[in-house]
Image (tube, rainbow, N blue to C red; front, side, top):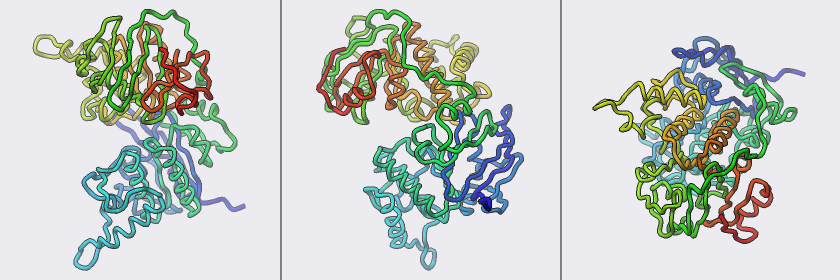
Amino acid sequence: MTEQIPALRLEGIVKTFPGVRALDGVSFSVLPGEVHALMGENGAGKSTLMKVLGGIYQPDDGRIIVNKMPAVMTSPLEAKAKGIVFIHQELSLAEELSVAENIYLGELPRKRFGLVDWTKLEAQTNEILARLKVGFDAKTRVGDLSIANQQMVEIARALTVDSKAVIFDEPTASLTDAEKVVLFDVIADLQKAGVGIIYISHRMEEIFKITDRISVLRDGQYRGTLKTAETNEEEVTQLMIGRKLDLSRNVRHHELGRVALEVRDLSCGELFRDVSFEVRSGEVVGFYGLVGAGRTEIAETLFGLRDPSAGTILLNGEEVRIHSPADAIAKGISLVPEDRKGQGLVLGMNCRDNMTLPQVDDLKAGPFVAEGSEIAIFDQYRDKLDIRTPGWKQIVGNLSGGNQQKIVIGKWLSMHPNVLIVDEPTRGIDVGSKSEIHNLIRDLAAQGYAVIVISSEMPEVLHVSDRIIAMYSGQITRTFTAEEVTEDNLIQAISGIGGSDRAA
């Protein structure tokens, strides 16, 4: 049997940054018509390897081969010209331009005298959009689209060229279940056309659903390739992190303290209504529900980002009024937001300054900030959360998504809050870092913190929570203890099945 020639191969890629050997002789290939997963913890080297492939970074050693021909990628445009197309996790769209202009940016069809052929542009775009089964057309302004639909515009770019390999980087992070089905159909069509697919995701269920092989990086080195049909989640995870994970349900080994936070009949317009619950010191309460159930809006109200239309908030038995995040912070409530880049970080600032931003005034020595105190705080939480960075001077925007999330969590932990609200604590984070953050959340509860965890991942809320509050359409439907909750009754509760139970 003749060995199949890879659509794309990277051989012995080396990339070094000051103080860090990000890639250490990595080799990787994808076959025509194959969906090949590239996995690894945050900081393992996946993003760096793809940036080398895309011409953003130049390798210190090694070579890239496309269809048997050595290739040098000096820019993303050159990579695309050679048939290498990227679908990025972080959107790179021009919001003021139309869908058509974004899809064909830099490659607009022209008529005589260099004028844009708008008729041809819109026809080509609408043909692609029809394949994606979206509800907008070529003329739609990208800034008017939802994040999920903007992601579909990114995906449409892959269909405009004769692709040899398409790289999908966490493509389903912003997509609904229905949109995921369309995406997987598009990937299947690309497979049939002989295109090689590199699929980067932390979502194991997707990896085992659509991929043919799985390659793993760890600490900048290639660790092996497995056939998806012949392996399992445990084997892949061990290859990624070099150890077994604790996937057990939460078992509390400490006593709960007094009620730290109590919410009575809280409402915020049509976003959520008559919400009542309590959280005790030493307890992790998980909120679980479908998108739009009102979970994040409750967190934002408790943190002063939204004004409630009715209801009462009590901290340690005393009624409080929270009109701003400053009020919430002063009263000991901290929020790790769902959108870390938009709400949790200043991407152009360094790690230390991001970590200590909420407490700058408390760290002043006279008119100046005490740099030594700031560095000490950063060092403490870098070690505690295993934040992988060469040092505090590193710009946060240069960190991997998982390490960025750890900076946000460390920022609020350093404030020693009475109530810590964590919204989607591990979104975009690898399995190893997830385990560390889950253990940290449980450790915080053991230390006496009252913790609220909002998550869209059922295994996560089952793993960390002492109690789980299920929400549907802006209301609490059931409250479960860790002992009584099952996957079936939790799914029923978030689907509005089985009545309402507002007991705290």
